[in-house]
Length: 284
Image (cartoon, rainbow, N blue to C red):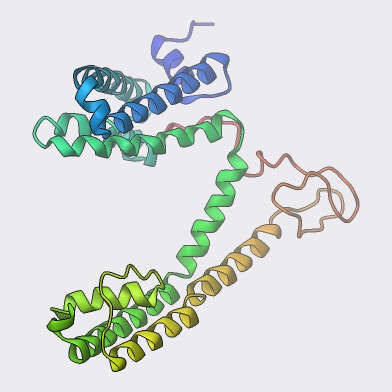
């Protein structure tokens, strides 16, 4: 039996979590990611940046160097480098190192390195919390199923705020701070969403009446997208429950994290094994 090659060993450590070395690697990687984000946050504080500017830059370049080496090694040991590069984590890994290099030309771009935080999602694989990712997939599918209704809703709201913006512009005018229709549309959006910054306030009785109507309308329609998403989420969860079948009595309708059948008490398949297979993915 031949010894595993260096490339194979690297793949098991970097992409896998079933070995001790793989878990240690991912936990160290997450610690480095969190540390790099802490440096990024400290750099945005003027007092800290003024005193430790040079040191923070050294830390940032060091973290970027480590992430660059890691990305190159991932491409090297992956059985399908192109598939990894095009995968979700592959793109995130690349975006995690680009801001620092781009900051040499555009300094403020360096703060976009906050995208590294998305890489912490790998902790779901390490701690065997894949079922929670499945729950997030249910939510995402619900949003996708409701996208047409949500689009129609936002289109209707966009038309309403445009109408109210034009009306308040005609009623109040530039003398009361409503100097342009875009600015009035901004006021309508702030008012209909019940945010109410108070930077633009109607002064005339007619304008105040329109503002009151806009606020009441905002309370009336604020529950519409919630209802749409809730209905789709309920439908998706009911559909998902039908996929969890008891091996003994063949009954369905179990929750995703159920361990035993609620009809006969027989043990169900492991929740994690219902979602993913034991074979490690080449996409990390």
